[in-house]
Image 1 (tube, rainbow, N blue to C red):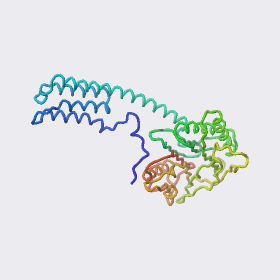
Image 2: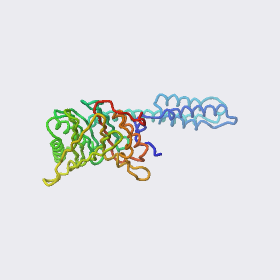
Image 3: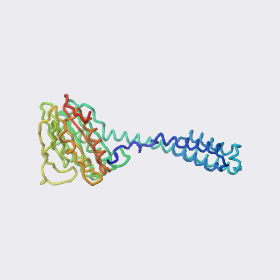
Image 4: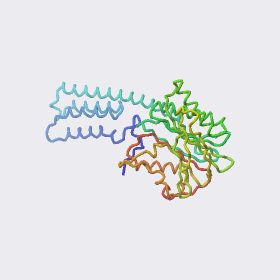
Length: 368
């Protein structure tokens, strides 16, 4: 079974496992017992000096100071096993302990700064990639995002679902590249989408607005000149139809009962190509979307993930033959866990959005 790679909790600033925090105390107790109970005299003083250094990297200044004082006391204590330590030896041990306290203090300051930076990054992520609400109009939805940059919380993928005068509209996009350049382009595309859906009556014009914004901002130097693939979806409130438009983005999957169908889209150009008038025009695709069905959209980072043998993740194959899950969140959780079991390493950002119409969906036994 492949190792899980989608959990970055261990990379959070200040995250030290509990068992690791106990190591200095356990080591100190063992050395103290050895110093008192050893049948032969043991020159233990310099060994105890290692304990505060260990504590400095896993504990705060207070606990490091407590351990340092204890170690210094053991080195200076008038017990038979410490008789071999003279004043110079005790001073050397005390010096190491003092340095350990300083290291712990500096590490604490650095750690606090990293927590602040992480908080700012998390706020930036919520601005660029806000959490999806559980309900938008007559829709139930859920989304999940994983950055390819290890330890990062933002990247080049984007998604959102919003109400508009023309129905509920959704976007899922993937900007070329990773890191801050992709983040700035993703933020521009998402902000333009929020504005365009309020004014434009169809998805073709929404896509044109996104294209213009990306090109103009790149020309003026506000964002890097990067390509972006985008999937736009409009959910009609007057009928059970949905309209889809792809700007070079993978087609979503439609779960109908125990069947999984890839929506037949004719992808147009990606945003930022600057093609002239002879390029293929963008075209909407309309299809029915009933209350007992679920739509799953994703970025290509999902289907391009590979296992140890180099095989791509077969999303549709792993979903085929299974009953529609009871909620979009359960579907997202299932795909995420299934991906974690399959993949060895993720080299691209991964986004998932599942949408269903409000209503009681049929359950699936393996997701309960």
